Length: 140
Image 1: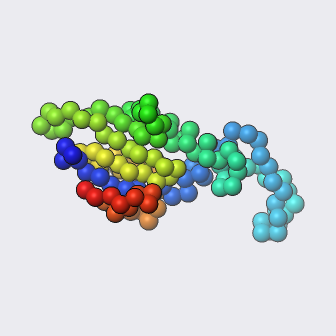
Image 2: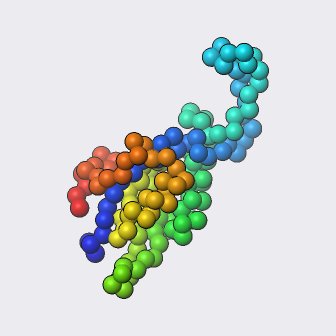
Image 3: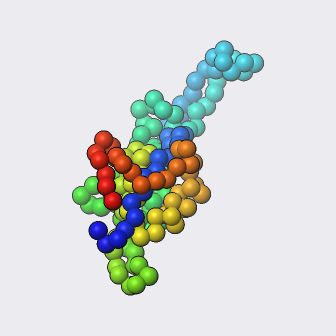
């Protein structure tokens, strides 16, 4: 619709990009070597912590706000911003977010991806037209 591009991307190690809100520590084990037995402060939202999902969501939301995207009222994981094509046609760009999986709908997806790549590593450095997204078949 409206001759827009559709691409999918996956942010690598997403949770590790966010910081924890609470104070968390662990005692270093054998795998740490000579630091074994020392107290280690955890500052990143590790996979498996109860609050990591919320920390990542808030961190990524701040990135999208900085890019002038706003969450829709119907679904806080559907982000949109007003845009204009070179021919003057006004439309909305969308980023659909499911944890670290992104579906980007825009006339200039490459520009959005370039900004995201400058902030986050993308899995396999791969951004492409999706065949499926969250188990649903997707067609251009």
